[in-house]
Length: 209
Image 1: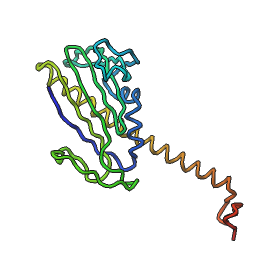
Image 2: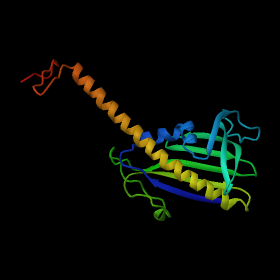
Image 3: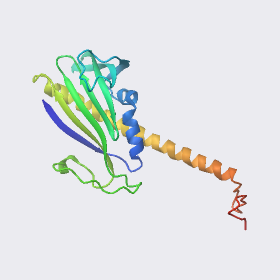
Image 4: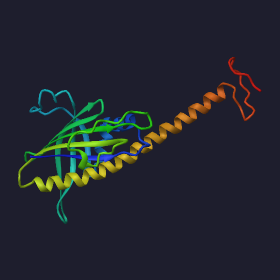
């Protein structure tokens, strides 16, 4: 069994709302993983745990490199469960491999004026920022002892790419929200009768110079 946590600081331009929305977009999360070549919704397997049975289930196919020049495909199932600040997943793969992960957005949104988060003990060496938001990935992996190093190395390499892509995509999504907000504001200003530097306004509470 291998249990560990990975922390990735997020740019100040990404809001908590957008970061959580990205984690809740299951298909996008799956497609950002460089190993996955196919995925589709599926029914829960017969051995699904009671509290996982009603989650959203997906069947995925990974392309894995076992040795230089030696590649293969692995089919497996995974359940996805949204949380207020993130996402839980549970992967059931061949050879008895199980991976439980919890993705969450921690820290404080400086732009929104949130107070600093109380830092957990033992987290000082994980790169948790004192200010700002961060993506936290808690991993609990069970597999054959002879496969542990290979699986962990493959998983970490793929998830680093996934996280990098996720951060960029979230930043683009927040930028889009900002631009749409600016456009809506411009439309509302135009509709209110405010024009040019001379400020001609039809609102009953504001008069023109």
